[in-house]
Length: 134
Image 1 (cartoon, rainbow, N blue to C red):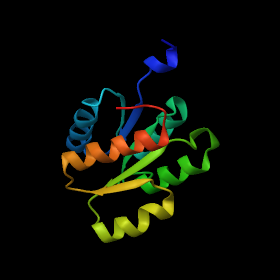
Image 2: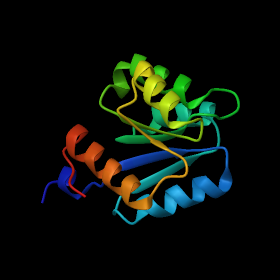
Image 3: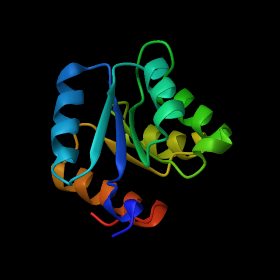
Image 4: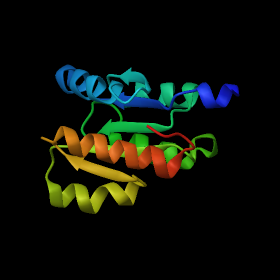
């Protein structure tokens, strides 16, 4: 089996709320993926540039750089062009629906979110943006 076939998708989860960060991290780990964590936008972008995750799950409202700013920076970096971005936010469904695509997000979910919706969305992003199956 080739090395690339053994590799698992890498997902970077960024949220300044430690409880939400832990909840999302535990949920996506069930998919047999490699999970990285960040507590704010700057840290998320540094990790993304270093690790080149397959999927990023970003909280919108974080101190320093917002999730939207991180998403825009990811979209402007050619090395991260294949990285899928999922925005999580509690700012309201309508605002999230209108704003997340403007920054280049591939998908968005509103807090509180359903675990099945998170699983489905992450799996869809992995299936459409990577060569992995989960």
